Amino acid sequence: MNTSVVVCIKDRVGAAPSCAQGGGVELANLLERELAPLEVPVKRLLCFGRCNEGPNVRIAPGGAFFTRMDRERVGEVVEAVRAVLAGETPGASSS
Ligand code: FES
Image (tube, rainbow, N blue to C red):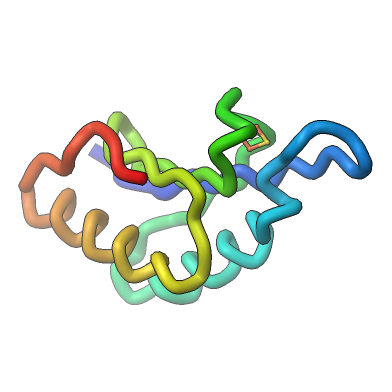
């Protein structure tokens, strides 16, 4: 299993809510730095379809889904990734 972290960076300027408005790009960059030692890639996605709950982050494949993410919660994602890498199964959802 190749674990990765997927971050929505969709930006709908002046329209409906989107993850970039809440800092999705910055979250992706920060997660990339934090996960580099674990050699877990961060992928940018243009919408999970849960825009009103963003910024959204998912551990793939099939891992935890983090809604309303901010910089202070990056550690939660890193810990969840560590759990996946250790062979544990994280919860299906986290918000
Ligand atoms: S804009 Fe991020 S889930 Fe739709």
